[in-house]
Amino acid sequence: METHKHGGRRADFSSYAASFFAPHIFCGSVRSGLGCGASALALITGVAPEIIASQNGGAHYSDFFMTRFLRVRSFRTLRLTPRMISCAKNKIGPDHVLLVSQLFRRDEGTWGVVFQDFYYHNFEGYVLSSLAFLNKPILSAYVVFHPKWRINYKTTKMKTKTRAKGRQPTLASLRKHADWTFQRTWS
Image 1: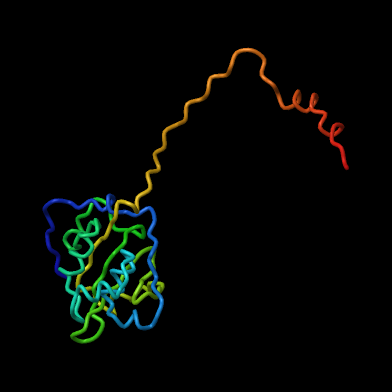
Image 2: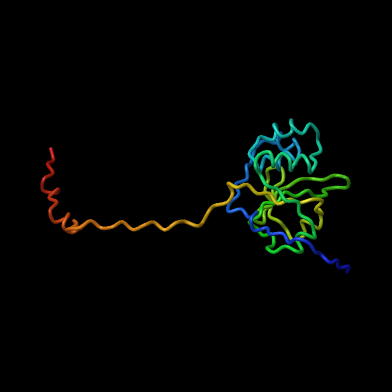
């Protein structure tokens, strides 16, 4: 086995972690026939795959088109390389949204989205198997992130209200002086 020294700046993938990801599933068999690139982008962005296919103008979806389409819509993308992953401070986990290009058949690639051990391809979800990326090797992969996917868990503690001076009514005193059962008239 050949080993290489991986130097340089260490990547920090923690800023790309998503608190939630809601895939946009479009129905219809015609839509899945528009191409896996359009399906993957529609799944992430919510833009109809017909619109994406009309903007691409072809059956092939290049890495440049895919990343540009996402960046125009305020998504951040980071191309993954073996060197970057092996030297990372924080590893990529199930809370990262990945846009993956794979070799599907000889001279044919496909696009899919990975999140929480699920692989989405043409609006269908599959549970990832341990051999998924061996049988269909990865050609390129991107971590995708949108600021709306992050929930700020840091909340400020509410200030306690100061109590008013003097006697405060209690639940027992309210019950004692409430003669609502005797005053009710049934007509």
